[in-house]
Image 1 (cartoon, rainbow, N blue to C red):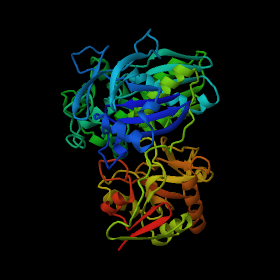
Image 2 (cartoon, helix red, strand yellow):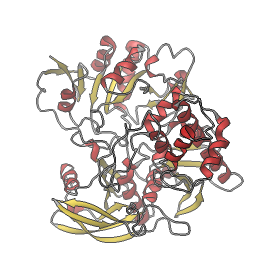
Image 3 (tube, helix red, strand yellow):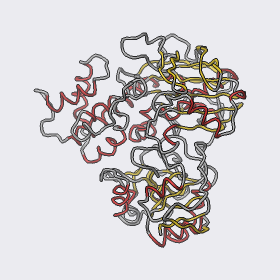
Image 4 (cartoon, rainbow, N blue to C red):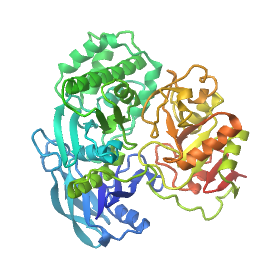
Length: 555
């Protein structure tokens, strides 16, 4: 069975699952240097993706469109999405945004009228919350082992809800809401403060396709290291929030009350203090609520995280180190970048009864071939050992483009800028050439078997989604990857999950004695990964590009 999952709103994408195996998952932002969070609002782009992959529309057995919400004031049970096909407006009914208590979690709605090619196709739909849930579980090690697990789903437009998945036979149970806060509250809170006010992405004409503040949370997570988290104010924050009705303005209202209210408890607090404390508070509230939900109950000791909130490495680390669970899994695409995959995975699991996917993180868009050297650049043959020597001998960053792109928002070695981490000035240099704020961290990518020597806990973390402390003695050896608070957003690699990066690091370690490199995304500011060498050369802010066995140098 060939299933095509579609995400039409922000972080739009298309994924193809064949008999439980992911063939590819393509996000719109990773095509043609598109803007981040790009929707799939023109359906002919889906036709283009399928054509690039050699897939005929007639070969597809099922189309699945991710559920969404209706504009305010309209029927949320029967939302309509307004997109286009070949310049003509299209209105598509979809499933609702979130499942409700008492309803079947895996309920499927069937529709007709999806225009692709010269025909209108039947399609199905699931709740947006359901695709997050199943996208996380079906890609987890628990699914591969056939084990029950809990799944916490917390996305921008929904409150945190805990589910249980029993795979044999497949059964999904809604255990309940943890507390009444929308997942966007941290981003909205920070966007109301001066460091981020006015700097976030402007709202789109259609808020259905592009909600506000999508690009704030990641920056604010880094900015928090400039402040002090004071748990002594948790009671004040709870009182303030409990006095508000659940709404999408709670973050804005809370920030205004703390910053400008007559009874502000923090008259001398900096914006960084407010952000650090609120981030810490949300993590502690999540930990406490989850603990209360699982203690004393016969529930599996395994947890999957899903939804945009699972990109917060501080919260992830708090849950992983809490002792509540034996294992915690976060997929590399917990936000809406994995929604097309999640929709297809849900259809496969419900249809087949097998809630597991065969997948790899390197199944994004193909690298466009470099037919000629870009103007102003020359190239020579260069293997991975030569790339390692280039990094070691020059001490300069190199754009690396190889194979299929990574799934999700993190650059994991196929669309990366690599650089030595031994010079403290490298972090400043990388932030400068990427037009990023000086407080932003640069991530390390490290050989998995060496990581415990450099970081605590240093446990396997192939998708850069947990917090690690830098061990004493190593801060001075790899200063470029140490954040302001002494932590690092570590990516570990082994020869099975990431053979190319593992080979590169092994070669670099032989030359330098250092088992890691700086790793940051290769992209224009505000856009997806470079799709080819020509794009990286046009950007031109590093002296060398390595791609598919060739090293390009600016002449």
